[in-house]
Amino acid sequence: MTMNQDELKALTILLKASSSVEKVVKRDMSSYGLNATEFTVLELLYSKGRQPIQRIGQQVLLASSSITYVIDRLEEKTFVKRVADESDRRVTFCELTAEGEQLMKEIFPKHADKIAEIFESCTTEEVLALQSILKKIGYKAADLLK
Image 1 (spheres, rainbow, N blue to C red):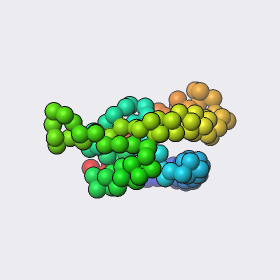
Image 2: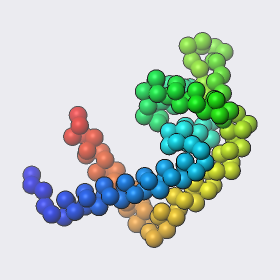
Image 3: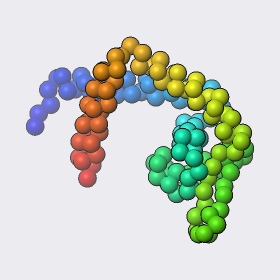
């Protein structure tokens, strides 16, 4: 299979767009005093509620040692707390504290507005088409890694 110039140009555009979007999102997250991983963990707990720490690591694609560090940092900031599972001592949950809940109620709508701003030049149909195309590309790339 040979690559044509359109595919090379599409890849270049994809990578540049991804980099720019990532910078905007990270800058937005850091404006709240959080790094991207901390924000992602808080968002997961905010949207899904209490989670086993192991599942949080799987959801945000972090090694267990890294997720422990992130949760330690969020605990120091008083945004989350660990809760032991009463029926299985091997499992520890993480949940938002009242402070973490309040923070997310305050900042998540602003973050959502920033994401909407990124996509404001696109129609709903274009956003849905983008989702579909990026899934195709992502699944194919994942298959090539196997």
